[in-house]
Amino acid sequence: MIKRIIATLLMFLTVGSIACKKNGTTPEPMPSNSSLYFPPVSGSEWQTLTPASLGWNEAQLNDLYSFLQSRNTKAFILLKNGKIVSERYFGSFTADSLWYWASAGKTMTAMLVGIAQQEGLLNINTRSSTYLGRGWTSLPVLQEDRITIRHQLTMTTGLDDAGADDDCTTPACLTFKAEPGSRWAYHNAPYTLLDKVVENATGLSYNLYFQQKIRNRIGMNGLWVKNNFNNVYFSNARSMARFGLLMLNKGIWEQTPILNDSNYFNAQINSSQTINPSYGYLTWLNGKSTFMAPIFQTVFPGMLVPNAPADMYCALGKDDQKIYVVPSQKLVVIRLGQSSGTPALALSGFDNELWGRLKTIIGF
Image (cartoon, rainbow, N blue to C red; front, side):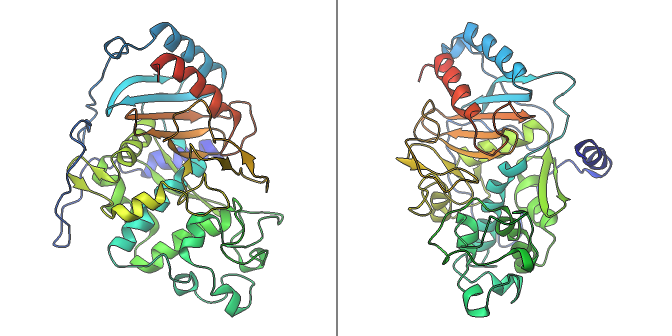
């Protein structure tokens, strides 16, 4: 299935190498973090730093590559201050190879919803049925109308995630479990329906709106591809790193504001509710006192990734697709590949093991 999707992408993929032209509604650029480097929007140029110039442990870095290869990694990129310190590909995978983001794409969806809100096309406090139509669930109208876009962004719709297929987006699959906002559950279907929210709010296809507002403006490639109920993003590893750099700079690409609503961005990377404080708007957060994981209703004590800096936030996907962003260290770390061997959920033991090694290399 994956090989077939990638082959299709190679036929139709349009590399986002040309920035969209500004229109009359484009806001004035906000100040960028001047200490960050941004690669040109077009072309393959990307400045580098050597581990030695940063005082990093190069012997341990070489050991890391062996570890990554042993854990089914296909691509690994590490940015410091926006520049590439490490970029490795394993097996037949190359810089041009395409791979799926899985649920790491959720964080891009959250940003796109924020962009639609800043353009006045939707309001996340509005009931979801305004954009999805009445009857998008099996709930009575009054109960359905209590679910808002914010609940979809925070995994707190109250819809039952324990059905036979938690990806299923048909009304028959979307049944009542709890009052919206009272229960956190990692439920794919309400998230996936944000695509329809965006489409109906903007009047554009999800791919086209994403390309216009994020992909082309920061030089990514890639495409959202429907796979059964899910909508999955495919791209090369550098495109993932570009989005991580955009997240590091709080939604601004150098001097170009992509998401310039600082209140929304700050909400995205901070606790969105008290049930699972380690979750923002479709974004995982480190440094909190407790966390919850996909599938389970257990509240676990401690940080999400104890070996990582407390201010880290992440986009995490099945089979260990990873975007880690660490503002205090100005780091972006990317991992693409097959499952590392731990449970194939968005959150796995691989996260802490990798950061244990990175801590030794970097010395934070």
